[in-house]
Image (cartoon, rainbow, N blue to C red; front, top):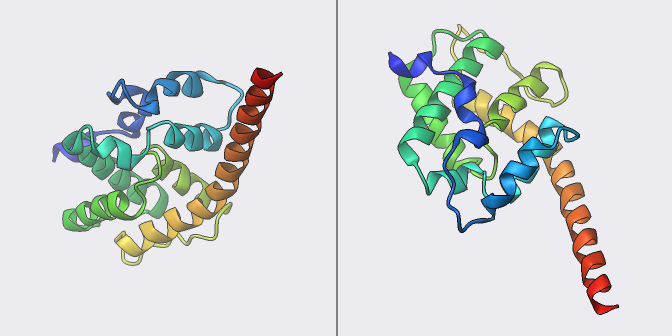
Length: 171
């Protein structure tokens, strides 16, 4: 099965072709900023056209394959669920696209990292070695709660910068 041999490196937003006429032109600067945490980079990437929802518009097939691989790998690595049926992983990829399209692809792994570190309230227990859409939903929901705080902070900073720039232009 070719899909299972892919790694999470596929999901780097830097490797995805984004439209030139979108806010994605800001992505290289965001991703190269070493002072930002992974969470900050992810939030900023989503703001500038790197979300799953934005990427689906450019290449559904490769994104779906990458999400499949990422979710499958996280199910094994973080939930010890190697017995998960392929159909379940496929449904998880569709679920991520439909319900968590505002996240960047790389945030899926970050959500699992944070759940494993107990930085979110998500439960990673897979029963009988099988991963489920419920587990993915709990992990991504817990992550989005933490992410929302960072997103608000970034939006506020951006608002303040825009306001300062506007005030300088008026002066």
